[in-house]
Length: 389
Image (cartoon, rainbow, N blue to C red):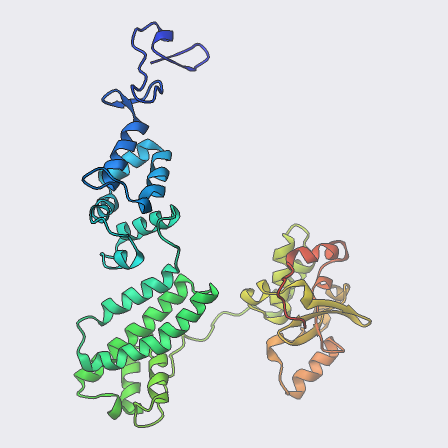
């Protein structure tokens, strides 16, 4: 009702009033919300009304949900109950007096409210957790095929089930099925749907498809991911012969760094102590061996080892000798170290490799100045399941 000189809240009697402004149910002072009760008591009543049946009985499945809602911020929960579509969906499900499962929620419109309600039920322990990326793909597939002609569905559903969903299920079981992977899978299924629709408009089917017709479709839709569907169709002999869907790649690079610019960047990675150590390591490996950042992030300490003739870094299955500590001093006068990705039987490449790296094997910490080599292991976290080189 008032504040003290120290800025603390005061109850009614302490502030000189005969009214104590305490909740008539729990006795909590202040924050009276309705009918003489505080916000938490009012919200508790509304949650009980929302989740219970006509007789006021609360299903055992929903008790953890009630406990979590009543323990949360009463003002936030009260606002959610009053304005959210998800709260109305929850009330309808509770009124059915049946067990709430993922399958029941799958029958609802798959919008933001349904997804939020599902996550709420999972978080509170009402529902078990599942891989939503894979589950949403299945729901999307059913909706995408709904209403299509039966002849096209007889081809599209086996492709989706045995080519796309089977691989997605395996990755989901390993815990590696990401939203990005699900997006790619949807694009491949969508491309197959569009392609079969185009065949139907051309009075064609897979049995009469030719390479020329396929190329005609690809010419007008170069970004469509139809390759998986074509390979699957050819493997099952749905086409009269072997067909290939070659993707159209984006244009070749047009901007390049000169040798001097690349050497300067490499020299900075090797010697500039103001740069973070991780940045220097990644930059040096990129400039020396042309490694993509994603592959560098997978390197672990077991990939680095020392031998009598120097330090080595194993990239894939190939050890590469790292340059010596004083190599930057004569950087301009020596040819660049060949990329680890350019391993071949080409004699010229092998000659260059033997000149720069005598034993043609690899390692990483010697890329750094002597003062920072001891810290290199921090940039390559060890993996408990790493494969020995």
